[in-house]
Every structure is written in C-alpha cells, then in structure tokens.
Image (cartoon, rainbow, N blue to C red; front, top):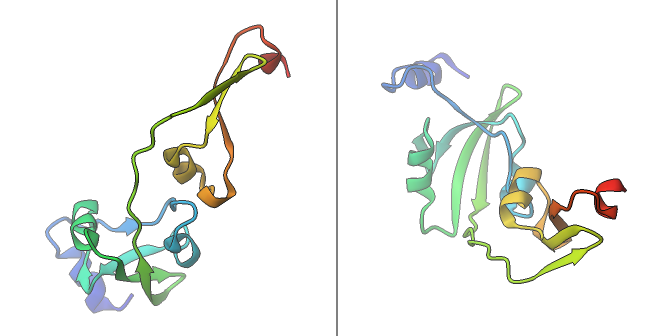
Length: 134
C-alpha cells in the first residue's frame, strides 16, 4: 500500500484494524474472485474496517464494487451479492445408526462446499452402531 492509504487506515479512529478474507461462502460469485488472505480496502468506494460497515454497504444490492489488496497489488472487483436463506431441516434419514440430512448452508459456508455439488451431512451417530464402528 502507498503511504497515504496506510495513514488513512491508521487514522480511521479504530487504530490499525483491517478486514481480511478468511473463508468464503461456497458456490457464490465471491468464491471465484476473492482469495483467503485478501485484505478488503473498500466496498462501494468507502474505506472499510468493520463488518457492520460492509454489511450496511452491501445490503439490498445485487452487486458491489470491492477493492482488495492481494500480494502487494490492489485489485478491483464487481461482485454479485447473494441472499442467505435460513435453512430448515425437512427430512432426515436414520441409517445404520447415522442421522443423515441435506447439507445445511452454514456448513457449506464454513467448509467452502458449493451448494450445487450437494452433499450429505451426518448430524449424529448412535454409540455402538455400525456408523460409529465404520
């Protein structure tokens, strides 16, 4: 970063707080453009250093402009936003002592698994069952 941008980050009233990408929601546009370790400098042309500001800037928009620092170079992206649904479990299967269900979006997000790829989530295993043994 140039010295002017560094001074802006430091003088923002919150010390030297920055936002860094540490995980991406599987299957969304940001997953293809952003990388873990990217430092988010601006959203919609506004310097950001907290999640609340980011959330406010992207709310109710179909896409946003994001400026990130990656390996010493600044990159500008136009990223489509995605509405996050609240999952409900409407069907489970008990098989050999394992409780199976559709992959919840929160797990998909944490593990970076695309929703289009699908998957099965084992929510519990009964002690002493074949599922526990194998």
